Amino acid sequence: MDSAVSTIRQFLIEAQRRIGCHAVAFTAPTRGDFHFHCPSDDAREVEEMLRGIAATFLSQTRETNGPVIRNRVRYENGGPMIGRFLVAPVFDSSGDLAGLAMMYRLCTHDSFEQDDLKKGSQLSRQLAHLLSLPADPVTGLISRAGLEELVDWRLKSLGERANSSVLYGDIDQLRVINDMFGFEAGDRAIAVVANALAAVLANEDAVLSRLSGDRFTVFLPDCPLPQAQKIAARLREAVQARPLHVDDDTFPLSICLGAATLTNGERSFDHSLAAAEVACKAAKERGRNRVEVYRISDTSMIRRRDDISIVSRLRSALDQGHYQIFGQPIASLLTRDSVHRYEMLLRIIDEKGRLVLPSHFMSSATRYQLLPQIDRCVIVDVFRHLRSASARPGYTPLHVSINLSGPTIGDDGFLDWLQMQLDENGVSGEWLTFELTETAAVSNMEQAQLLMSELGARGCRFALDDFGTGLSSLTHLKNLQFTSLKIDGSFIRDLLHNERSQSLVGAIAQLAGAMGMETIAEYVETPEICMRLIDLEVQYGQGYAIGKPRPLNGILAPTADLLHAS
Image (tube, rainbow, N blue to C red; front, side):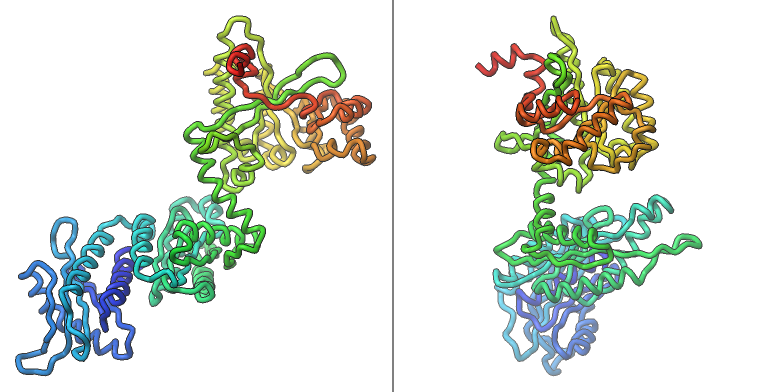
């Protein structure tokens, strides 16, 4: 089902609906194509008749160069009337005749009128425009732009009571194919899946499109959700039945599909596509090679839907620089030292100028692989602030702590990029601590060890974040060069009332001391918690009892911040 075939099919269905024909056909003389739509029992006889008469209408259309009505058509002079016809030429972008649309009514039905002629002319121009849109280069399917135009075109005539459906498909483990066999094999896998999907939809009123990468969508006009679910099941089975052959290897293919309803007047196509994507993501997480239907009552799908709605705004904020860096102090609990360092925290600025906390976007950022971009944005912005502040008279160097996510640590190009940023901004490693979670470090052990070795040589320090909630292997502590353990806030919140939390915090403090590491307690919210942490010999604290997050520019230039506040 290439782009042209899909578009022509939609044209035929729409023309039959809008004009009220017994049958509609499209013939393209240069390509030798003939496409036909007739929902009646006599379809085979009608198709044969239209094929036979097409050449005559093509000749007449070349003479008139426009649409014509023939309400009394006979095979020969004096013979019986075979029907009524409205024929409209379809021209390509160069003005050449690309094809002919033939709309057929039985001779017992109403004649074609000027209003029909006007509609037929509009439809043929719309078809010419849609055929001129570029197709996907890998699969030949209709592009996203063409899909959206076709959807809009069909929805306008279906009416508000029609229930259409949208499917969203994502090939399972395409990355594994790319890693094992290369990207050329990955493109072949995409093409194999596209052919499997197209074969199932060959006789359906459906528009199949490749969105990007390994993602497909299917628009099913006037198709209720239960029927769409059955079609999705057939699509899944068809993909599973077509493995990828690479030399002597065979790799099984599968796809996850999500289905959502599209009720004209209540939901936009984009809204329904997002809902279908949510259902597809649920299918991925529930085992792959599955079909899931979007249900508003499914709490996990609600969370995924929220993530999808957030991710576009998050991407836009990161790309346009609509964010601000805050610093939260980390202070000594055992000495009068006021502040040990500041942890850098990202705040997104929404379209109304309000600050959005990480708790509202980190789930979406994690799910849609935006953590590396966030990490780099924070580093670039913090280094820029430090370089600018260092040029001011009387500047006192500020020790900052920056979080690094697992995907960032696993990025082979990140270390070189970070060292370049250090050099370009003149930032000394002795004023930097990088925070890594246990899971992020252990999941990328080789890269984490290289990162610590290279940056440690520049004076950088490393803190093990959220200690006590991850893999917690003492072997990992021994093999990784951490200088600090940050005790997870879940042990600190109930420290005053939970003896087990007190025991664990005390044990962590003793372990860290024995290994020459400092301890930092997160979520220190009250003076009473501070005092209990001192009793347990925890050295540093971070939380509202220590200090609230403040904009980094105000921390680096406090006098300017006071002037601004006044």
